[in-house]
Image (cartoon, rainbow, N blue to C red; front, side, top):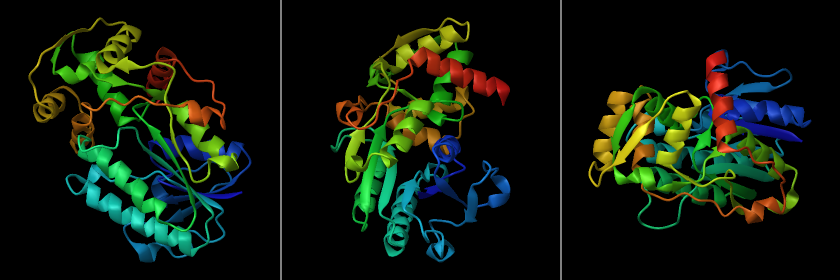
Length: 297
């Protein structure tokens, strides 16, 4: 199958492209700068920018299925508008080229007015993509554990740098982290499961943890001990300033993520298991793999 991966040079795309090649697919990777992307052998690399429709000419030609793995949080406060435009341009180009399937990795969270701007934007992209003339499969995930994941990088740096942490009550919010290897297995798996076309699925790892538990267990795996003291103060906005002081994660990405920590993100993944079988990675094993990958980088 000829498969296009947008966001191929990003965190998820970096892992997904070789998995699709290994599964026997003919992969085309869309990147903005090919000189900064080192593709696996056999992958066709094309340049284009989803914010510039003219640059997409020919990108979707002869493509059977396309993955949408892009986001614009690094652009700062205008990320939601940029994501909306990119999704519209993607949908128009995919439909115009006769792409039959689109697969989108979205964010896990309830559909209500209390969602953070980041999670609302991910669901708005879902809505835009759903209007295209193709069959859309959506996978919704919470924090992805892996080297290169900004969400996990914040957890790792906090665990590594602070022996005692005074935190807002969001550290008690339930979350269902998932290993990057398992996300990739689901993304690749739905492509070969025709019954998943047109459906929305929630995916998660084998454990539901609070952010406090994730930080404490990550610290333990790094040979450290972390004491977390939750207090009913520190708004999400103040939390972003505090995280800016403690970590070197990019502010333009971290700030929207932190505002979403108040939202419980727990998956109901029974539906996806009927079509794609994935042996889920325990949280501690996922963290060990992420730490080892960072050491090797």
